[in-house]
Image (cartoon, rainbow, N blue to C red):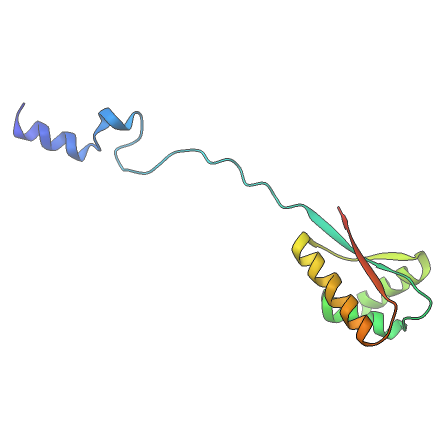
Length: 118
């Protein structure tokens, strides 16, 4: 074996041990596809005591709704008994529910929110 041949083997990435991988050293293993996280709806439940203005403020503050959209959702909850505030990953949905429930308790309102898998 000549010195030149030995050099070529080393720069070739030692193909005898690499199988069919290219000599660039880039791994071509296929990774399992990342599964999209499950999404959850944050639902607001109607009650006869929480002021409508409070509900609109909650929708604007915690769910990023415009005043017009917040009023629309609030009226939907008022008329139908339940309405969707938004759809999020589990952790985000759970956090939003806890924030809303804490604020409602601080203001002594019986407002209830829950999550439901989409």
